[in-house]
Image (cartoon, one colour):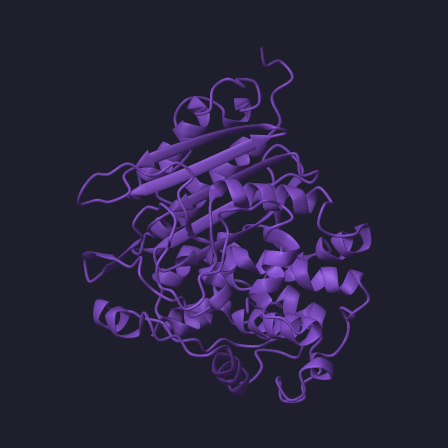
Length: 415
């Protein structure tokens, strides 16, 4: 079953067996040395010159920049039916749509089409928790048990550890491996309380704060924490604190509705060689079912890094990172460092950028933004390659290239 794979973000969740995934994410034994380097990917640099020459900031009259389109086409060429890319510098944005919204009809991808954001929602969750910290309503180093007695079985886990994936909590959420399982389970996710209880019952991967492992259980608890402190459902707080203030008109949580009510591309997953429409579903991780667009995610992340959503102290806490662990995650996020709901990665040519990625059945998303929040890029894909690990990483590397090429500043000698 794929439930154990929720501990790994992105397309890797769609391909590895549970046993292999568990081996890849498990923290190494004391004194052990890493022996599993990332496999080479199936693609190299995209054609067309040095990516460092990219400058998407100059042609303000061209909404579809050729270099952004070129990088999006490189993602599509791997076999992704629909790719949407958006890049912004200051007040100037460019967009590219490559492929088709439906492989049967060949219908075009709608402009700024909607999609489920999967684990990109973790940045929203962390932002709301940090807003509550800034309001003095809770502390990052408060024990979780202070606010939600018994939920982590008395373990000394703090709120900061939930948000930084250093709690040691494991995942136990339902999911599917076959078309039959998808058709049977797509409308019947477990309640949050059950998913949390099942995850806690699996025991700790490590003592809280001593290592790092991606944990959806920790973020489910963080969303319950928002509800406990505010007295409101977590999704209402997202809407009140982020969606409406930023004008994210195409971002919403559908609740128990399995459909995406806005124009969108069909979402696909391959089961036993068959490409299956998996658009209609209720994701096992509720916040992962948030629907958004490349435009709205771009606005949110640039506002966040630009200091519009958090006070300086809380933004600094969010950007205080530690290295990620687990061979699979380190392959997906090379030299990645995780803050509180934010990933920091090297920007080719120097510096680092911030963002988050998300991957669930039929929706893969990659987001990046510069340190000052001025440049941002978002890539949405409606299918995750499900073959070998090199193939999966090829999709991730291609999506990363869209982002990093867009975030690089123009060359000094650019005309």
